[in-house]
Length: 283
Ligand code: AMP
Image (cartoon, rainbow, N blue to C red):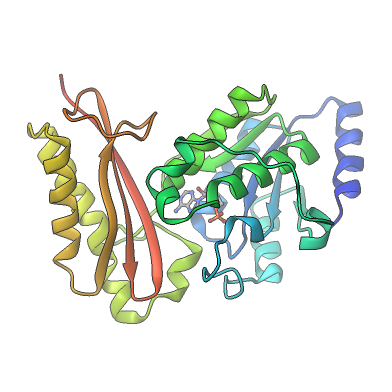
């Protein structure tokens, strides 16, 4: 595995692959890798001749008072894990390499980026969209692989790629979970033991509410309230939002029909966790 820290280094390798007619799948990450990330890398290997990963804790997607400084960083372990699953190139730039000066150009998606998490993390999705646009421009992958765990992020990226005619195809993989259902996340490392146990309640609530929808509940407000109530029964969890939205627009339709996304953000102590579950509604 090649480890590259400069944009020029990535471009040089990409130029070689262009000459060889080889295709690249890119997996953008912030590191502190777990099985969820590695599933994306394995899928990337199937989709292209080489899979590349990036590890970059992107400062522009963190708000003031968020966890940018304490976000877990362990590049050596990440490198070992990526190598073991067949990654051809790791792009691990420093902040100065990605942002030699504060970027004047920002990708913003008004509306879409302001719903759900965006309402609580102003500027977050502009940071995400901008850094993903940069990574796609640097690596020029044929396909980029993302996880459905960050559903709103995927929605934003898909829309950016469509609106700006970016050539990469966007591939989305289902959420990888711990055995008790908790969605894998680098931030799970922050959880105290009791919080870690309590956090399993997020997924069990999503599943219970999914069953209610499949069983006939079609009132989106009632479904959202049921989700918040079920998670809130666990004293160590505080619901930031619990919603039942259209999976494409992320807007709430009063009556559920077709497909609905159950989506939540929850605090366990100081740790913010997100999760979602897509429900196909029987017609
Ligand atoms: P992150 O490093 O958290 O920014 O995530 C990098 C990529 O991994 C994103 O596309 C995430 O959606 C994806 N990802 C994170 N956690 C999971 C998971 N548990 N299952 C599948 N994909 C995930």
